[in-house]
Length: 119
Image (cartoon, rainbow, N blue to C red; front, side, top):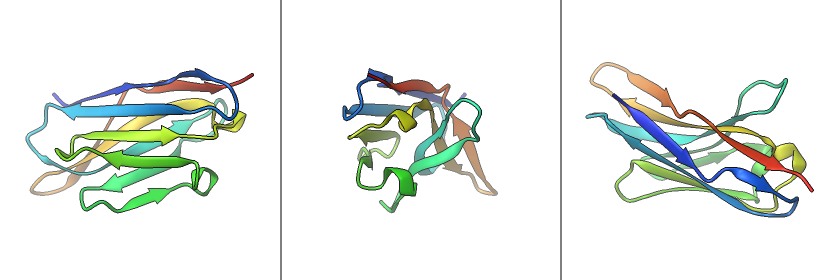
């Protein structure tokens, strides 16, 4: 049973910082990529940032220069350092992991962690 356990969400004032973590376990397959989506009330889920096993990163335009994604050497934990947070960053943040099986790549999701940016 694959598990993605997220932590680090919370309430922060505009301009503040938070660090999200996501640890994957329970799969015998290699993780090809990990990252974060977010979903604000009344909006579609959107990609925030992702990182591949090779270290290639991608960011939404709205977070470039403020957020940094990184992974650990084991390749099963991903971090999202969020700086200069804005009220529009308020959302539920969902971690994902893409597992490389012999036939297809499967995606699993975390349960979500709330990030609220408010004064």
